[in-house]
Structure formats: C-alpha cells, structure tokens
Amino acid sequence: MAPKGDNVVVSSMKLEKLLCMKGGKGEASYANNSQAQAIHARSMLHLLEETLDRVHLNSPEFPFQVADLGCSSGNNTIHIIDVIIKHMIKRFESSGLEPPEFSAFFADLPSNDFNTLFQLLPPPANYGGSMEECLAASGHRNYFAAGVPGSFHRRLFPARSIDVFHSAFSLHWLSQVPECVLDKRSAAYNKGRVFIHNASESTTNAYRKQFQSDLAGFLSARSQEMKSGGSMFLVCLGRTSADPTDQGGAGLLFGTHFQDAWDDLVQEGLITSEKRDNFNIPVYAPSLQDFKEVVEANGSFTIDKLEVFKGGSPLVVNHPDNEAEVSRAMANSCRSVAGVLVDAHIGDGLSEELFLRVEHRAKSHAKELLEKLQFFHIVASLSFA
Image (tube, rainbow, N blue to C red; front, side, top):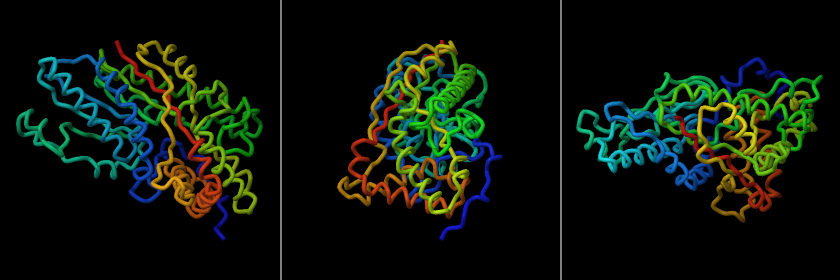
C-alpha cells in the first residue's frame, strides 16, 4: 500500500515556482505527449502566417526579435520559431530588403525544463560568415536563441523590443487558484472537486475573474514590450458553450476519470477528502466573449482575428481499437501537464497510484474518449499600432 500523502504540504509554495509541464524525455514527459499540440498547431499555421504578414518590416540594421511565451520543453516551440523566422525572411526578401539578424526568446516559468529544450535546439549557423551563408545553412538555426525564465503575466523584456509574440496552449493556465475556491467559508469553495467542470456558478465565476485578471496583466506587459507595428498570435484552450461550468475538452480531461481517480484515493483511505479538496487544476477555458472583453478593455491592440478553432483530440494513438493504448494515452496526457502539481501535492508514490487509476478507469471508456474528448481553441491575432 502506498503511504498516505497528507503530510506532503506545498500550499505555501507559489504556483509560479512549481507549475511546469513534465520535463525530461520519459514516457509521461511533455516532450513525448505533445503530439496533439503539434497537430493542432500545424492546422493553424495559415492563421499564424496571416498574422506575420501584418508585421511592419523595420530597417535591417535592427535585429528582428521573436518571443514564444509558455514555450515548454518539447520540439513544438522550436518548430514554430523556425516557421516564423523563415516566413519573415521571405517577406524581407520579397520586399527587396536584406533580412536582418534574428533573435528568438524561449520564455516560460523558472521551473520549466529549459535543459531539455536547449538540447533539442539545432546548432547555430556560422555567424562568422555572410548572412547568405547563415540563411542557407541546412540543419542549422539562423537565429540567436535565449531562454527567459519568468511569468508572462508580468514584464519579461525591455520596452519596445519585440516584433512578434507567439503563445500557444498556455494562456488557459491561471497564475493561481482563486483563494475563495479553497476557502471552506466561501460560497465558491469547490468541495469534492479538483476542477471547475460542472462546479457551482460561484466557483466558475471566481475562475473566470482570475483568468480575465491574468489576461489583462499579460496584455499590459506585452503592450509595453512590443515594437510599433508588431503583431501577436495567441492560442489557448477555449469553449463553445456560454456556460463556464461546461469546460468542454478540458472538462472531460480533468473532470471525469481524473476526478474519479482522486475520489478512489479518498475512498481507499490513501488521502483525506480535505487533501483532495485542497487540490484544484488552475485551468480555465474561456469563451470568445471572456477573451474579447479583456482585449477591448486593454485598448492597446487591434483585433485582426478572434475565433474558436476546432483542434481535435489530445489523444494521439497508433491503434484506436486498442483500449490499453488509449487509456495509457489518457493517463499520460493528464500526467504530462498536471503531473508536477500532483506530485507536489500528494507525493510521487501516491501520484503514481492516482494515474494508474486514471488509466484503469479510462480503459472501459476508450471508444467514448476518442469520440468525445475534443479540444477547441481560442485563436487571436492582435496588432500593435
């Protein structure tokens, strides 16, 4: 029997110092469980390129600087940076301008596995040679790279320094779980749940306010850091329902088998109900209106495009009829994004027990999961005057 996790306490630890996707290159790592994000990102490349076509081309004597916010630790961020820079090189060349030097900033919380990310970076081109040699170097990156640790809800860069901001599959993560959600005296106390899917109106409103406050901070910081004529391409989990208690794909991911697995640990006496109730996934899938209200209130950006985009399933499997493979993918998908938080809350041993139960419960619902577990994304293209 696994040890009880009631003595593992991280309530005083700031989420900012803890939250990250699961690092390394293991089976449950984000690097090996972000194929769905890669597929969804590729399906939106035409929207990204439309955004890049609006970026003002500055004099080539100044470096062109790109930042990916919430980069995580897999290949996806490297691919997106490569797409952005190659597209901008073509724009400079088609305008009869010599391409400038490029810098790419990979930004995420300090707990992110930057080591794995940097190991995946292609080697740099020979910057001692000509620009033409740099751009033609096959298998090499034609940009300077740097990691930036810190929360994107605050300033990360000098004023007027960034031409393009990109952020995908990150903005739905809150800077914190609203305090009232964990307060037994509050009407928003999320008793018996570890996520807000099908929670009370008071609980979901608290999450909505936190999301909008976080997004306001994000936009305020970017409005100071972006160069005039710059653009921003943002993607986050979204929902099609006007009802915030219906969190769509995120609700099915965290509000069904994941929730039931927590209840199993309580019923088996491995953790207390209070321990479960003190854990909440800090994710909110906004509606278009939730997002639009904050952008308009900020007033610094022009909305060039704002839409809900169907991304598809987060479960990528080779054999859809294999229940064991589907259930394993479900458990690994949950673990790759929430495993670090679970580990910190109940310890590694009980965390292992929890995700084994997620896998066991998902096995008998494999076909239903593949059909119904679908993600929708908010896609925003914003320009800065």
